[in-house]
Image (cartoon, rainbow, N blue to C red; front, side):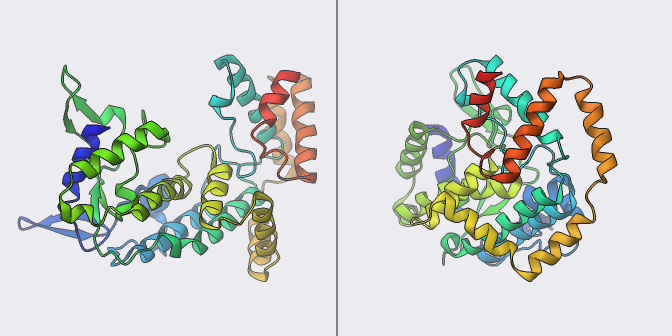
Length: 341
């Protein structure tokens, strides 16, 4: 972390005036269309009506990322992402076997009704994206300086010598310039999607500040570091890069609207859902839902390899979730159910 902080302080010396990816022409480098994974991965590069930069300010950039998330939620597979039923957290379990059992229960649950790609789940993500748009002003700054950042700062892309000194960082092919708050995100290991613990946050921050010049320290104000954590949560959601979308959304939203409680967020969802535009979008999404017969065939094929009790439990949990959507979003549920089965 100390070494990565020092490297980050070196990057601070070379700001750019736009957000985008570097292209070389005639020996000169230019910031052009942004190759952010949020705009290109998972077939997002197929969307024609999304702005791709270069962006002259961070507000345009954030708006583009949110549009990409909305399009993804509308049209692309959501895989293991079920907004109101996050995958169980491994840290909540004392043994790996109990965690695996909880994940199996979760798999049973989301199979009933083909939940991940259902219109209901897609609309949850679209609603979340619209609420994210409301918090863009809390991220935007007047700073017109943007910085290169390694796109995949994982353990496998950092080379070290026998004394654990970093000798090089590889895989810069799709790097792009980012706002300061994104540059200052403390690297998580073994993968960037992993959140750094409090100790690592402090070590990285102290190292960046220590190795920065006085001019650079002037931009490293407390607000920048506060925005860094918010930026990590925001990018996790935009990239669909984790398994805790609901909890991360609640953490981010309540960090911006500090007087908001989790129950109020559901009220915000319901208010948006009553809007005519959302009602129309819900009808459109509903047309793409699998037929009841297709869902039945998928369920039958899946539960053919599971005990009958597993299917009964998954259907009971589904009934409870329909009555109270936040029931399954409670992080304690899978652990408690696992202990009873």
